[in-house]
Structure formats: C-alpha cells, structure tokens
Image (cartoon, rainbow over the protein chains, first blue to last red):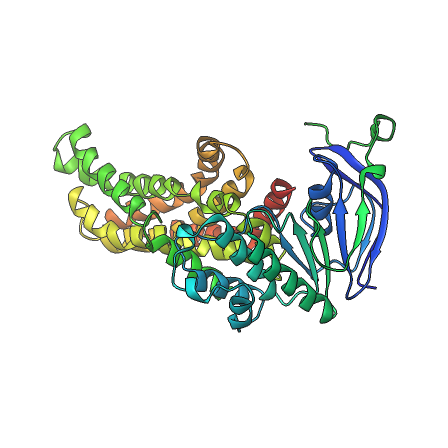
Length: 205
Length: 218
C-alpha cells in the first residue's frame, strides 16, 4: 500500500470543501478523481502533495514520495527545454534526462527557449519533469489540458510505464484516459453547511 | 542546491533578468546627490559615507519583489516546495543568488561612486568592507520580506514598508563603519556589530522566511 488517506477533511481559504474522505492507493494502481468544478479536486491534490495541511484526518505514505504537477508547469521562459529539465532533475537528485525527453518527444525542441513553446509543448515538458523526479507517487491536476491526441497517447504510455514499474498515480481529469484506473467521485464528500459550522480555524479571512 | 543557484544566476544574466538594474539605480542616486546639496566638496565629503550606504540599501530593495514572485507565477515555487530540497535551504540559496547579482556588484562599484561624492582617501577601503559585511544581511532580510508578500498583487510597496525598518540596524552600523573609516577613526566596534548582525540574520532569517512562505503557498 503506497498511500492511505483516512477521514480527511481539507479546506480552501479557510472554508472546508471536503470532509470525511478515506481511500487507499496501491503500488501499481492509478486513481482518477472526478467531480464538478469547485468540488475540491485541486485542494485535495495540494493537500496530498503537502502544500497545505489537512483540516483533520491522516495521510500516510505521501511525505517525500510525491511528484506534483498542476496547472502551471514551473518552466522558466528564458531557459531552454534541456536546461529546464536538467534543473529539475538536479533538484530531485537525478542525472539522466534522455528517457524523459524521448518519452514526451521533446528531442527536436531541446535547444528552444521554453518561452517560445506552444501551450501543448510546454505541458509535454511539464509532464516530462515527472519522469526526472524519480518519485513513486504522481499527483496530477488536469494533466491533459492543451495536449493533442498524439501527446495524450504519449502521456498514457508514460503513465502505464510508471504503473508497471510499481509507481502509482492520482489524477484529477475530466476526460477518460486510456489507462486502467479506479475512478473516485468525490462529490458525496463535499462539505455541507452543517459540517462547515465551526470548522474554520482562520480568524482573519 | 548548486543547480538552483546556477539557475537563478543564469536567469538574472539572461534578457529580462534585471541584472544591473540596482547598479544603475545606485549610480543615478549618487549622481543626483551633488545636484541637490550643491557642489561644496567639504560638505559632500562629510555626507558621502551615509549617502553611499543609503543608495546601496535602496538599490538592494529594488529587485526584491521579483525574487519569489516570478517563481510563484510560473508554478516553480509549488514544485520547489514539494522537492527534496528543504525550503529553508532553497530560500537561503535564492538570497545568495540575489546578493551575488545585486549586493556584490554594489560592493565592487561603490569606490567608483565614492569619487563622485569626494569621499576622503581612507574611507574607500572601509566603505567596501562595510558594504561587503552588510549587504548579505540586506538580501537575507529582503528574502523574508519577499516570502511574506509573495502572493499579494502589487506587493512591492508593502514589501518595502515591511523590509525597510528591518534594515535600520544594518544601515546604522554600516554607515557608522564607513563614516569612522573616512574620518580616520577606529572602526572595530561598528564593524564587529555589523558582522554580528549579518551572521545572526543569515542563521535565523531563513527559518522565518520558509515559515512565511509555507503559509503563503496554502
């Protein structure tokens, strides 16, 4: 068992959005989070990634295991594709960026400045960053936004390879990607007015 | 950590990185002072250490709001926070990169600008020493201010208001070291105080910066 979430409540801007959520993700498994806009998918993923503390409940197995990719890719527009990827590889203590470049078909763009890439190319570079982290749990927030069909297929191949290697993936997405995954609809755990009462610990918001 | 330092330095030197901005600002302030107080060389010589220190301090302030705001905009800050690098270390490295691109050029250029203000002969070496001892503290305190204000739209002014009062001890002892040096007096007391402040700030401030940034990233 890689990641266990027990009775988790998360808040955004001091307002609880999800309460009492529990799930497990095994090694080699993918979990897709579903829910309407504003259901709390991003907040849940940020909490799992350790960017914000949970309101209550426990997350086990996430610390220093997680590679996080969200709406922005963390690219520096004045650095080339290779420099961007090499930097993140070095931060995560890895050296070899060639497999990541190949997996997302970035070889031809190697010396281009990231600022001159199209939105889809930037996203491919942002996803290639996951491969150079060497982390077992990928936490992805809308990973397929602005990707074309070929790029989505590259992404699915990369995810399948990651799962086959014993990694796991938790992602929030609205499309149905071609990978084996459990689907979890989080809308039943949305915080209601009753569960919200008195839950905020922020006095100045 | 080396990778982060190299990346920040590389970004500062590439187009739009803002390298040299502080230096140009320092030069302009130094040139404007003789216009505003008049060309009396004895008066200029007397106020030169203080003016040079104030100019260097304001020049340091100029690039602080870019220190973390750019990394927040493109999402790198979130990714750095989830990386194996402790946030305290990452912020110390960013402060070091800020000092290397802003503080160090000011230290090296200060003697040249001293000529413009008729700084007395023995003052040059002490001006350089005091700036070299004091400017690292300006970058580290500035990083704390940037971490406090990073999520705020147009937080640059707020950043200045928060950071300038914290610069007071460094300014007092830095300018006093340079003044005493220029007057040929003993400088050891203010110089030691200045070095002590800088060392304390380097040791303590990164923890405060990281705590402030963690709250801002929520």
